[in-house]
Every structure is written in C-alpha cells, then in structure tokens.
Length: 127
Image 1 (cartoon, rainbow, N blue to C red):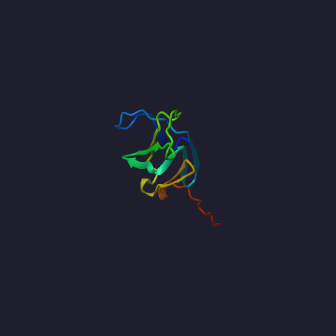
Image 2 (cartoon, rainbow, N blue to C red):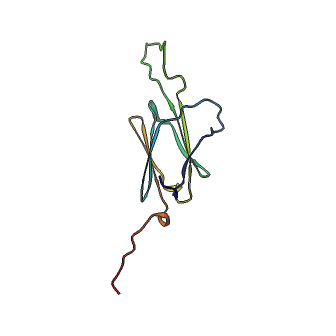
Image 3 (cartoon, one colour):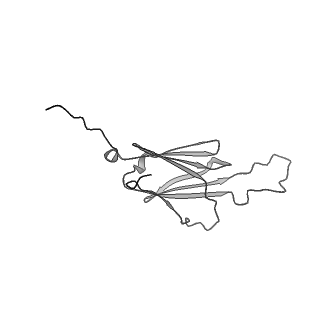
C-alpha cells in the first residue's frame, strides 16, 4: 500500500488474556478502498466477530473442531483455536460501510474509502 493510506496492523491484544493465533492476511488496494482476506480455518459465522472499536478494525474468531457422535478426540493439533488480528483504519476509510463475508475458512472484508478520499478524473475542455 502506498504512503498516503493508513491501514496499519495493531500488535496488541484485546482485553481478553487468552492466547490467540494471528491469521494470515492478504491486503489488496484499489482506488475505491482495500480488500482484506484473512485465513480462518475452522471458524464458522456464529463464532466470528468483526467490529470497529474507535479507529481499529478487530477480527476475532474461534475454530471449532467437529467431533462426530460416538467418537472421542484423543489428539488434536489445533491447541489454541482462537484467532485475533487488528488493524488501525485511517480517516480516509468509511468505517460504516465495511462489508464482510466468510467462505470456506476465508474472511473477505471490503473497506471502502470515503467518497471525498477516492481519486476522481477531472475532465479537461478546450478553451
């Protein structure tokens, strides 16, 4: 992302002291805003929270390890199934218009710029 945009990753944790994994993210930018893709394997919609607290976009999700009926889990690799990641949003982003979708363990967030911050073409006429 270029220097004028502010979508900065926050390193701190929320008030909860439980250890969390940082989900891998990809961030794409275009003239209208940014798209954030976050890998959240095993996280379902009902165990996912996406919110804006002041100027910070917070992603939290808890993975569920499905265990079929009549079967006992004796070994699990997913020891800390909590994912948490946060990003500071600059003033050019419209925090009220963020869209989120979850599909096959990938969270897609669309964070649009406010209209005034979007570049626009100025027509030139012959004088």
